[in-house]
Image (cartoon, rainbow, N blue to C red):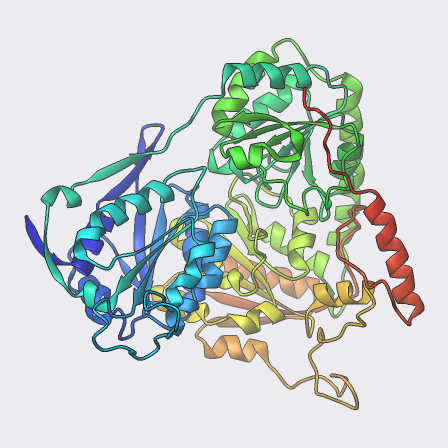
Length: 619
């Protein structure tokens, strides 16, 4: 037996957890972020301060941000590793709820260890305790229940081993993973206990690659080999499974074009003859044209979000779906033939089941023509110049600077849509846009997480002024940790994406522009805010770029530098990327006093008529 406090036992246990897949082992916890208060300083704070275990502690500046960083780390590690995060009870804990939701929505493993109120209740109500008259067993940590894939409160030391093992089961399950919350009462954290030595033994969690059921393969092959105009939609599951080579081989063998979701972008590198790029509301005209014509859609590792399906308006009424997914929940969507399996294994087995069949040559030729036409449109967007700079040109310059080893990071505003359409990925891991939750403020924190997981890569963070003002402080963390980021700070004086959307639905851009309050709205002139000076005050090197030539020069210098650099660029919010020619369901008021609002409603009703339930029998 080993006598340790509960918190010391947690640290020792976490340091001993490993994952294994395909014979390669990975330390599961690459470290622990923490911000300390009275709810965790004497427990996990003391344990981390005195630990000799291999669990590095890192100081974040914002609790939500450290969860974003952990989620980005997990994504960059293909979910084989992650980070833990600890906070005090109270506002520190609830600040993590948004990050937890993002991790769970994006199916990314993150361990949250918030402090909790006293289990003994003798001192109640303690500082920052929520008093619920219905029960004394409720704290603010109950907010984590709906956004966690596993939640537990450890009220006694004896409960810790089963809680830790249950947490690891979920964190390492590719079908069930997401945020895991273990709420640790502050008095229990500091309590000593005699633990069985076996709890701290090196434990390897084997990540499965389940093979598809034979009958499911047969059903899927029957549908696919009947197709004349098939299309593959590659989602994040392709990347997490490290199935990109199998996807390429499957597509080439059977002559099937490949479109990509936000999470799946990079599944095929730019330039592959069957790579059609992004699909859906933020897609390319090439991918979307093929999606409209497709008689069979093969979804691989996608959850079919509304952006991917253009709010279910993109596919034909009689289109049939074959869904390869490790999660049965996602495989069952759109009435598809369900192949519940690991993406890499399923693609190999499905290719064998479809042996001797390929799509007609004319289908591949049409895909090539559509792809070349889109390439021409992207080239034109990348060549735009002026002051302020067009956003597509900024993206093109960053894409060129990223090269083969760079990764772009983004999450919210107008850039994710433009990046999805325009970015030319070099391969898996080169594109990292958080679009499951599209959380403003993710960008810099996410870049930090990626760089911690993959220090050999150049990380290019693209962030708008709106997101930057919400959460810029992890620049300080990057500087303190000696972690180099290249941050491209795009300033368009407001919320460009929602401004355009607001105008399109008759909301007249209310609350989307930065300025002094004038006679009515914020029309009193620009604010004297200097975001570049703010970035410099946080310790970053800062360069201002006012032209495309200056931006390219700044990117080259930032790439060659050894410290975090922020490149400040003003952009013109009225110049957007080429249209995807797809729809997205955003309701428009039925009643409007303006002609523009009435026209928007008519257009919305036309879009609604194109929506489909996709209830076609899959067999």
